[in-house]
Length: 281
Ligand SMILES: C[S@@+](CC[C@H](N)C(=O)[O-])C[C@H]1O[C@@H](n2cnc3c(N)ncnc32)[C@H](O)[C@@H]1O
Image (cartoon, rainbow, N blue to C red; front, side):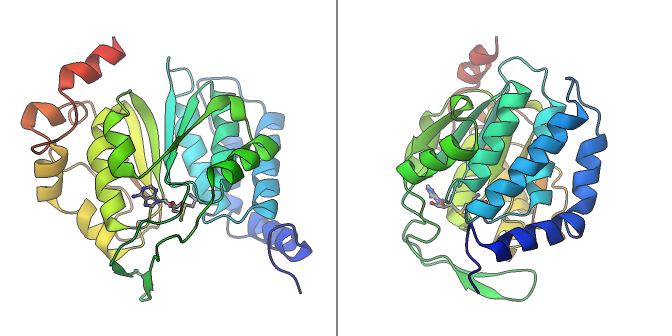
């Protein structure tokens, strides 16, 4: 039996997950209070479109994870200049979903990826379920044109900007205030680069979420006070779900955001704090 995107098997699985694994998250999203009017019909429509995307595109997340990210965006929906950043797009399924969320919330979605899959690397990983895994160069590849087509067919392309390139090359120049950042990048080196450049740019009240919280190396990095102090330039923040959940969440408190550059951010760290603050003025 065919099981890939577009198959009957996948549709049946989606319905089973909606009625089981993802049910609580769907219920929470349908009942949540947000600062904008988001009628029940719009919420049900969004969930239905999430399911449709999963049925047609190879994705690497659960609906519950993506609804949690959507919830964090909707919580900030009345914020001027609201900006969501996704690092790690794969085939663009999550990108299409987040673009729909961004349109409803009045946000921009910035999407960073090589659009060539994983970079060459020698990392070997163990996850909290006891399995070892490698992420070979080129894995999860979704080309720029494939992701663009996916967003055009299933999402809201007008809400979305695609930024192609390796994170180490693109993120240092991405100097803009961010509100919700989602990382799904697998490699420790990629997570390190993303956190170092992106976390200091998240406005107070915003949040960074990582879908790599099941990897032991990522857990160790997020729990490493030296990493936060020496490379990000802030006191170690609270990491919700660390060591327990695949989706971990790091709020950018007023006391931690934007202090990075005062304390260095490493020798070639993020831009001076005034550059970032001027964008918020
Ligand atoms: C697991 S996939 C993302 C899946 C997607 N979030 C989803 O749920 O369908 C990981 C992505 O991270 C990207 N990636 C990892 N490290 C990168 C790096 N250093 N620079 C650019 N892209 C990178 C890969 O190209 C790949 O598309």
